[in-house]
Structures are given as structure tokens and as C-alpha cells.
Image 1 (tube, rainbow, N blue to C red):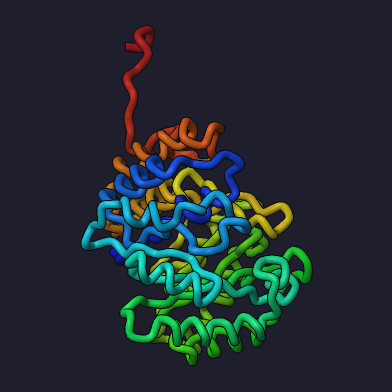
Image 2 (tube, rainbow, N blue to C red):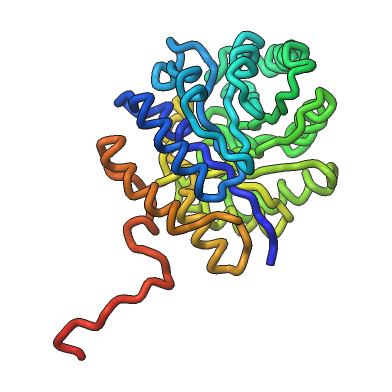
Amino acid sequence: MTRLYVHEVVTRDGFQIEPRFIPTEEKIVLVDRLSETGLHKIEVTSFVSPKAVPALADAEAVMAGIRRHPAVGYVALVANPRGAERAAAARVDEIVLVLSVSESHNRANVRRSTEESFAGFAEIMRALDGTGVKVACGMATTFGCPFEGYQPLDRILRFVDRLVGLGVGSIALADTVGMGDPRQVRDVCSEVRARFPEYEFALHLHNTRGMGLANVLSGLEAGITHYESSLGGLGGCPFAPGATGNVCTEDLVHMLHQMGHDTGVDLDRLIAAARGLPALVGHDVPGQVMKAGKSTDLHPLPPQLR
């Protein structure tokens, strides 16, 4: 039985593109519920310009209001040194930087060249010096860009090497628009782990073309033990045409448990939290297990067959 780690991103990645503002109190309630499920990390919010992401303009208030579980890492995305300082003041455990492997997507997403992003990361690392806040990076478009197509493996490896050199503690290889297929995900992850065997990598997968969980299996084959996902399958990059939601957390955990893996997650509590999402966001969500129930759930025979 392999110990695997699930990182929840719904209140950041999931809520950032919702047309309806989710009230601060409701975000806090959801984070508190998720904190009791056994998740390894929760990406709570982002400390970016409210003009850029108005859905997460309440970052400080949400971080101040949550009840922190000692076994959970509370994470926030930042885009610049000012955001990093705000996140540190809000006592986040870890910040996430964002870098696209694709030059075009990086410009669309953060309005910078990749070289400018790397220079900005060095400033952020200096701003966090002495704070004790961990630093991770989400490497977007690792498995394909909607503007440029598939990215060369040597570019992916070069970016990983530069991030490691900057002192970034972990990297999430992200399939931002769901272009990755199981063979590609296995090959890229295997190569990255072979070059950096002691480093922590996560997979951040989207289910845009229905291959999300299949790609998780490929990640497992390659030895990836950390997975980012979103409750109910919410989310998607606002700067990536056609990008739909993330791999669904409860569907992911259900599959891993059925396969005999240990995630440390209470699936029943997770499903209960997911079933509250449609009312919260005002529409249906993609998750399947929250609708169908677990594979182990049994039902009574119809009366006429008893």
C-alpha cells in the first residue's frame, strides 16, 4: 500500500473563475470542513491584485478566519514580492509561484516573459528570507499549451533545474488545459524524477478531455506521490481557452482507495463537503462519486424482486 498525498485547491483554483462571488464566511466554513478530512494541503486563496482576481479579494479575511489543523499545510498563490509579504503576514505555511513552460501562456497568464518571471521569483525568495514560509511552484502547460502546443522535454527539465536552484521546495507539474495523455504524462514524470530523484513533485491535472484520472495512473507508475485536485471538479485557468475543471478530489480519492492506496483522507467527509458545492456556487459540478456514491455502497433490492 503506497502512502499518497492529496492537495486540495477548490477555494483558490476552483473559486477564482466562478462568476458569482463566494461569500467570505462560506469560504471559511468550507476550508474548515476540508481541514477535518485528512487532506495534506489546502490551497486556500491567492494574494494577487483584486482587480485581476476579484473572486479572491478577501484573502486576508479568509486566512484570518479559518481554524488551522496542525496536520494540514495552508497554502496561497502569489505573483510578486508584495503578494508574498501579504501572504507571510497572513501566516500561510507555503506560497505557490506560477510559471508556464510555454512563453505564450506565461505572457497570457501573468503578463511577463518567462525570464521576467524567474527574475521576479528571485525577488520573492529574498522577500521571504527569514519568514519560515515554504515555497512551491506550479509549472503550468508542462503537458501542452493551447497557443504553442506540446513543449520540449529539455525545456521542462531546464525550468525544473532553475527552480530547484532558486530554492523552490517542490514543483507541481501542471496539465493546465488537459492536453496530456497517459503515455506522455508517464514519460515526462519518469524523466523528471530520474533527473531529480530526491525532489518532491506533484501532479496538477485537468479533466478537459476526460483523461484526468487515467493520467493519475500514469503518475503513479512514474512514482509521483502528491496530487493536486479540486472538490467537485471545479476550476480551470481563466487564460487558457477551453480549459475546464481540475481532476475531482473525491473521485481521485475514491479511485485511489479502491486500488488499495492510503491517502489519509476520510472519503465520506469529503463527499459530504462536495455535495454542498452546487448550492454554494449556484450550478451543477462535474464530480461523479458525489452523485453516484462509492462503489462499495450497496442498495436494497426493489420490493418486487425480494
